[in-house]
Image (cartoon, rainbow, N blue to C red; front, side):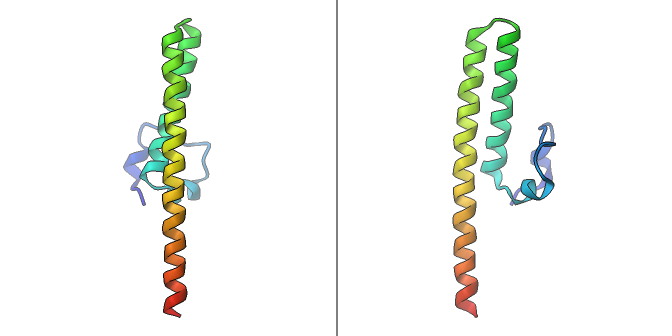
Length: 89
């Protein structure tokens, strides 16, 4: 799991606190990349800068992929841990 400093400078107010603490580094960094992408898209729209908007779309997509990878990793780890706990009983 990730320590709190990874959250500094990122707006995660829309996430439930428990959800944030259960996320791994890939999930958190992916979510941050998505937010960065949305900000770039908005800035590109405000300034009529299509290149900046496009970078934002790419950043958001990359963040989504990274978050998804992290989610799969976390869930696989949880499944392995659960199997291990069942074997111990």
